[in-house]
Amino acid sequence: MKALALLALAGMSAFALAEEQAEPAVAGKLVIEQYHYGMELDIARVISRSEIPDVCGVVPAYMTYEDHQGNIHRLEYVVFGQGCSNG
Image 1 (cartoon, rainbow, N blue to C red):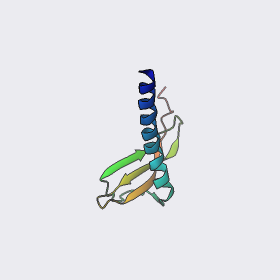
Image 2 (image 1 turned 90 degrees about the horizontal axis):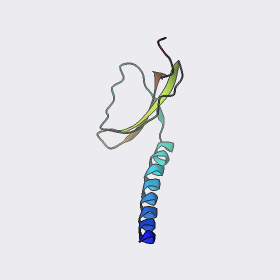
Image 3 (image 1 turned 60 degrees about the horizontal axis):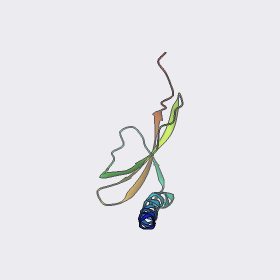
């Protein structure tokens, strides 16, 4: 019984690993577009977003998305970090 459970777990982790590695391989071939104010975006589905670091200041962030024609885009934009306190 333990061998069967171990085999099932090993099979599932291979699928999870394959899915995690698929997005960076796609992103490696993409040109990073710079966002500017007023830019019109055609976003059908967000694939991934970068995490916002715990720093106090403006930092770059990234979003990978699919447009309505099925094309994949990688967008760089700036956000204010989450490391500032109001005290």
